[in-house]
Image 1: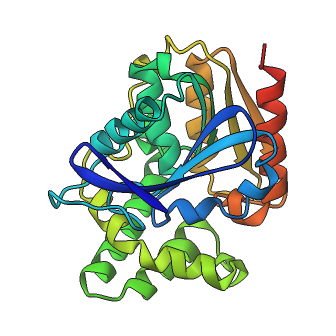
Image 2: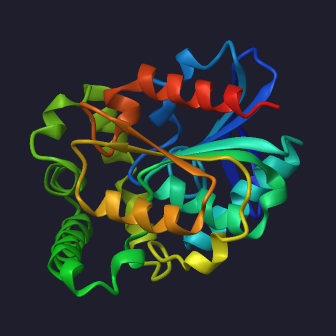
Length: 272
């Protein structure tokens, strides 16, 4: 991957594909741009794809020792502008979707449309007493993962996060290179976990976004993610939801071809 200086940090990036439609892909937590290697081959003939390592992840720097959602959002905006991709289609997964939605709220001019898989905006359901036990469980898991990272056990932290947070038995289903990618990016997750704004969002921010929006969801995912998507759809009348069978939170590794097909068909349907 090449590097470019963005907002004081060297970010690793690469362009893939021979198509003319600009598509930017934003990876989730504990991952890097390699996250998309299963999906990109199914998109290359249709799109000019920018993949990158978020600040503090993969081969990208964190020169000031601080990584947070606000810097991730600023980095995404700067990359789109630097490479003159606007208005671009932008796709993401998990916390990558959080970044996309925050930027779309403030800079809709940068977007042709968005595709988000299971945004991790847990604050959207925090005011529902019925969801409190579920969120407390996630909070306890998060604390246990952070404690394990602090002890130096990155492999154990990665496995605990996947097995307890994303699905029992999922770790063993991942290809070895995917598991290693998760382990290698534990430090980036640790930085993000210390940001109080990381999983927060205000629905008022996104009400004015009128570009095409596709929100995807797996039938094997944690119950919090459908609830988050329901909240977003309430204020985004143009948003569409697509459900996938046989996958959960990490669709890019489990159903890469079907996820790519969903992106392609959605984009072409809104190409006019």
